[in-house]
Image (cartoon, rainbow, N blue to C red; front, side, top):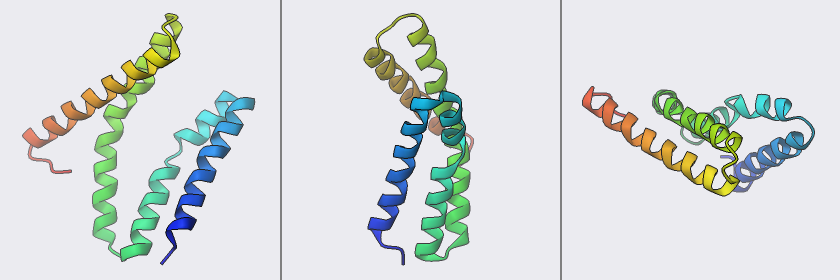
Length: 116
């Protein structure tokens, strides 16, 4: 079993690398950030911990459905910032809109009989 400290170190290093790359190139940082690295790491840790491919499949499917409402953040935030709304307010509104989108998605999937 991989110790929790190693998991935390790898995940933290990823965030630090992206923020450092962003200082030099927003495109390069966006490219790294858009890769499903966190998802890959999470699914790998899950599989290494319990060797259950069905649990990994469930996590992957749930992630697929929840990526869609998360895109709201990337629409609302730049629109507000380009309209000269302050960063803090823009981020708060974008996060609130994203949370609302999650609720709508989960509720909608539930009505369709899809369990996450």
